[in-house]
Amino acid sequence: KKLYGTGPPGSGKGTQSPIVKDEYCLCHLATGDMLRAAVAAKTPLGVKAKEAMDKGELVSDDLVVGIIDEALKKPSCQKGFILDGFPRTVVQAQKLDEMLEKKGVKVDKVLNFAIDDAILEERITGRWMHPSSGRTYHNKFAPPKVPGVDDVTGEPLIQRKDDTAAVLKSRLEAFHRQTEPVIDYYSKKGIVANLHAEKPPKEVTTEVQKALSSIV
Ligand code: AP5
Ligand code: ZN
Ligand code: ZN
Image 1 (cartoon, rainbow, N blue to C red):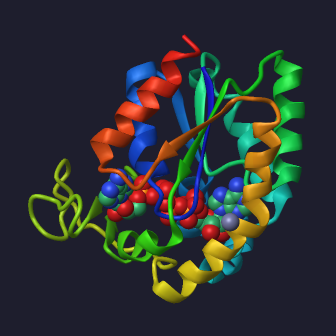
Image 2 (cartoon, rainbow, N blue to C red):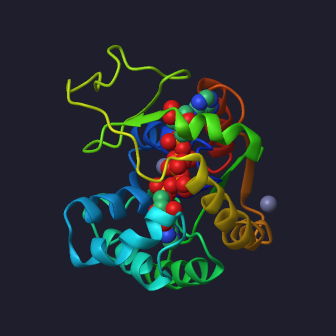
């Protein structure tokens, strides 16, 4: 299966993608996670991406298209993949189509994590994450067993630099202006599943599974 998960910041893409990944043995490609790793490692890519990310703006199409192009060559991604947060502009969507066309495949399903903006600030400002695995917690909705500590490794959790109410405003603006047109782009192809992303995590998982059962 070739899947694409989209939705505003905090809508649950990163929470649901690993579940889908394990169930269907797909690779999970999250451009945000890959960019944050590059920033932390201070690679040339990370240096270029940092400023836009800190401001809650999108990094350039060329940078992220390059990352995805590389990642899709991995052997583990040949059977299927879930793209989390890419494509985020219509240009990225067109480039993705070109890349996939060369491989003779296409996106089978778009999971649209539809949710009201008003709910997102609480989700974003309460989020804690384990940087090396990408595991995500929430101080109210999904607390770790010990506050500030990853359940699996015992390592410390961090808060994302862009997870403030002020930066969230720019991220939402970028979503509505640049990413919603991508959802229209795929709606025309008839492959978008609209999820009720405001529901509790388990119910969202059930909706995801239902959406995916139609493409088995
Ligand atoms: P990215 O990392 O993709 O951030 P985002 O799109 O803002 O999305 P988030 O990761 O914040 O939200 P999520 O939907 O994954 O939410 P989560 O599941 O964690 O991108 C970051 C930046 O990188 C961008 O701003 C941009 O600069 C750059 N970038 C990335 N991709 C790019 C691209 N393609 N082009 C250009 N630039 C790009 O959930 C959030 C919280 O809520 C968690 O604490 C979770 O525990 C909790 N939660 C989840 N689900 C529920 C639920 N159902 N009920 C209650 N709580 C829940
Ligand atoms: Zn995410
Ligand atoms: Zn909108």
